[in-house]
Length: 319
Ligand code: FAD
Image (cartoon, rainbow, N blue to C red; front, side):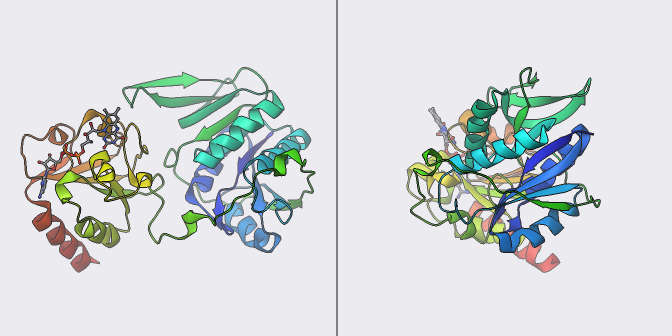
């Protein structure tokens, strides 16, 4: 069975959930092989994690030489592993970094690239992706027709599947060109800093809008009680209450969690574009005519400053 390469997304060796989702997808296509680019001292722990989710092989690229550079060296490392393994497909998480690596890799391998897939199935032995387009109004199916299919997959597109693979570790030494090492990262990775889950990966998102009046403490309180990520509408971001990284919508992030709570958000079409594929949507709004109520599963007409603390207290009580 042909190998399917999965690029491991990790923070200092802690494997992130999208990688485990990709391993589940890889199993549908062929034999999953994880590619870990990171510190050699973390390799055993990473191999153990991915092995538990079906990785038959784990390629380990020691990043001692490339650490701190932008994405170009990672694309070169993946290219060299792909040249050696001739995989049936290469799966990469749909993060900003993942998509840049995928783009560079596609050029190097002269392969077709599909980004932001929300599902990957196999038809006639080849991966066929589903993408959500036009702000979630339509879905499109696509297939790579040239070279090794390179596919970036959005978080929460598949459930991780436990099940041991062989997890054979193969240390790979790669040659990184000087050209790939021209841009260095000046600041440390901000992803490691927050205690909350990453917005696009979170199973639960609690978002606040203009209705918060700039006080996000109740939104954050509920998020922390639920183990959720915090999001914001553009009105809240434009008001300077939250950085743009929190914005959900057409010009922000697209999330698709199990549960999305919109507090003090009217439900403009541009906001919906970023959250309408959430599995369960709950809104708290004091205006019963607010458009957000058209798409909710549960709606509460009320003042968020009263409703959110009451819900938070109830959640805490049940823990
Ligand atoms: P509002 O529309 O002002 O709604 C606030 C809501 O809070 C109201 O429904 C009100 O009833 C309720 N409320 C007030 N006080 C309380 C209270 N105490 N308790 C409960 N409810 C209360 N928007 C995005 O969100 N994301 C995007 O990516 C985005 N991209 C855009 C791109 C373009 C090109 C354009 C033109 C617009 C974009 N917008 C985007 C803006 C969008 O059109 C809306 O203006 C924005 O979503 C409104 O944010 P809001 O719902 O927080 O504010």
